[in-house]
Length: 328
Image (cartoon, rainbow, N blue to C red; front, side, top):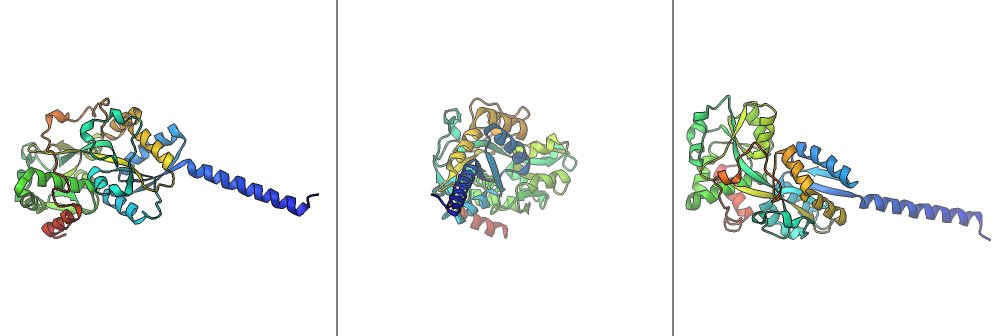
């Protein structure tokens, strides 16, 4: 005959096992994301993901470089499952932290954006000059990198720090590529006109608020202020800008790899990519999703095929050279 004490003990053990099972189920139904996305995109897209999948998303927002720094610091015991929207070159430099995963709609992605199996192109971004139209007349808007380097713009061009911002790093890479053998010389002249901010998100705000008449930023960042009625417009550098993908990737040792894969599948689905175009002004990497209606098509832009980070000496050496050139 079972004693009352043993019966109670078994009941408590059973309850404990059920509780542990419930906790496991709860853990399995979440995904942890490290992202360089600005808050407005996170706030628009995450509720869509959670509603469509039933998966709870925990989001940590950092700059592209800080995303991978944190992931590397945690590599022995990863806390996150997915890097969501970080500069492709940054992901490529840190491919050892990532696990290749091909999303269900891999075949719909434009092949020109695919460069590394460790990460998946997520959206494509254009680097633009944002102009405060109250401070700069149309006739005075710089249309080339050389014009933007004119000393009359000294202290009047907002830019994010290259050592904090993946997009600023990509902008620098554009100037270095377009300049050929004079790449660093050209960038040095340009940088004399810069006012540096700690984040890429601050640049369009400075221009919209009139703290700087010009700013180098991402197209979708500028479009958000245009749509909001700020006195700003977009200009495309005529002697060469770039389009490059930001990426999404599964982290090696992710605590929730299956929900991580489901997030990546969701991010590359046609429905999500269309929402990114409509809600965030981003250009899709899918061949079957059109660009936002109020931007120039890629065919009308002078696009530079970027040199690889390796060709330019590696990210670490480039950032150190940037510090020397700018005195930052």
